[in-house]
Length: 99
Image (tube, rainbow, N blue to C red):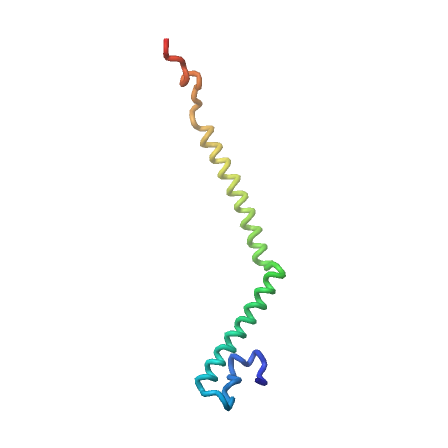
């Protein structure tokens, strides 16, 4: 296996092996390509976990500010709805009707 890792997707390193059939060499090549994909995925995952994605962080900060504004507006509208309701005279509601 003298090919480097980038060539694994283009060149079958098992093709000229004397003790392998064509099918076996193709299966081993597919496993080698899968292993390389997993190595690349692991490296990318490690890279993403070590440093935050600055673009994503910036977008999340904008979203955080918008959500804060939405929360304030929602609270203000709920407060407005509560204040628009007529005041209930509690003393009339609980008046003693036994007399």
